[in-house]
Image (tube, rainbow, N blue to C red):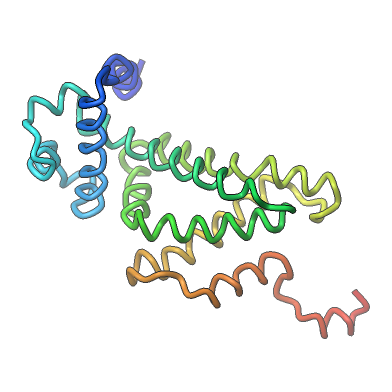
Length: 214
């Protein structure tokens, strides 16, 4: 058993039993998102988190065993919260295309509210590669069911669903990085629409397709 695995098992016994405890734990996670985003994992300390949260350092250990543990839980929580929000929003979609379009808008809005997500997740490749990989694998899983259904019904081309999932993740992630993380701005709607057009229509113009008889 690795050190990180041991910490994960220990954390399971630290889930607070009271509403007050749950609020304190969530407060620590919210502050950790700011601290890790601003300072980075390696430069940040537990003291940074507890001082900013106005919580005694000893109280921290009622909820987390270490800096790594709160960092890992933060990434898992951000991933979980995002996937829940996406699921709720796309439930109103009447087609898989509409579901993807809604999902793109929700993702870009969500990262605007959680701008530090980019740096926190990217740091994890150096902290614990399994955390980094698991984050993106869970994200990809969120795409697969809808893609497979759309491919099976003929709505989408017969492409490998996993390949398409990672392509979609790449497009949305880097557009968000360009506008949200680098410039701290909302992604312009015309940029979002260009991305959607690119995803569903590709780069080749309809005129060129007509010339080739496609």
